[in-house]
Length: 481
Image (cartoon, rainbow, N blue to C red):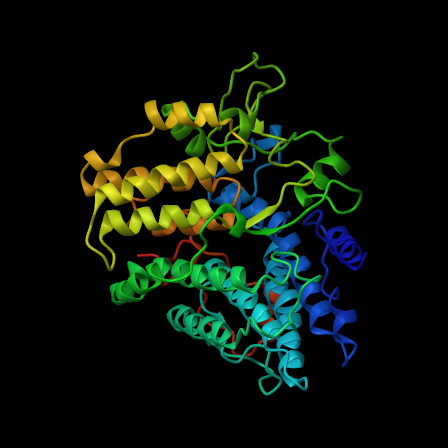
């Protein structure tokens, strides 16, 4: 019952991006005796809801051209032309720092201050906090980190992204070292992800490290040895290890995207359309996920799917993102087995810390696509046909062409995980050679595609250590070679 109450509280706040929720973490912080479990659940729920809602999923997906607004026929021209709502900028920042980050740090401090210390609980909170800090720096770039959540610093300084990423590796290592499987004290019922399974938390922690290193690699190739060392370690090894935030097909606990359409569009997706940057790749391969990802437009013929370009008017024949993806109990996917397999395929295709081996890369690549399709409940017979007839055999290609195909399939897999898709598209190649090769949308400000979000006004005005020289939205982050 505790789980249901917490989810209901947060979902009621996150359904749309039209409201500010600056004080939603007042209640947990008001008690100096709050249990780490409750703080963890509250932080996790706020985090999962923000990722899935109108302040994170939708604006990132529109501006990164994974989904389309359809112009005035649908959501309306705004985010696809890089006009991100100040509510989205501020609410997402506060979700990472105040609602989720601060409560996780409180959980860590309380857990470590107990007698005896609840080290497993602290480690679970540290791993989740590390993932959230990683996501935040992928959106905003430099940010408070080393001085964040510390009462000694009223105005925390902004750390450089490279320092943040290296610091996160150290934080994760410390969390792994802290885990003691023999200690029964851990977060279980309030652990909405793994129900206290510490083996899965260790695999997740190592996998987050690999993700961070892969993000860093093109800017800092010295991490290749660290990547190689992880290949012999304990990583996400099956779909059972998927890191998911759960939603439920029951009142007030449904997926945030479902609730948006249920509340304002009678349960229909009227506003979010197929983007050609995803659909055209899928159509070229006759991908069996097309009817899973998309619904036909209301005036389209049965089985007729059509996408629209970014910042372009849709019409009644344009395909919408499917209500299957927006079903009430669709989980929010944070790290999947298929993502791990795509990383492994890329590592072996590029020879990152290991000898380049396209045969090994091809095995991981094929399994990654199969796992991605299984997660979408594509029938096994259709998957087998696709793998046998349509998926390119990258073992016969040049390393460059093989890497391109890996990036294409990785991008398709991440269509509905817009934050991970944004990171992947930026790290997939030099500007002009990324997958996909995004173009500046019609009506967007000149300068280049959007590569970072601006800092929210509240942070700029409230923190005297905020940068005075502000980056432009088209400026690359440190990792973005």
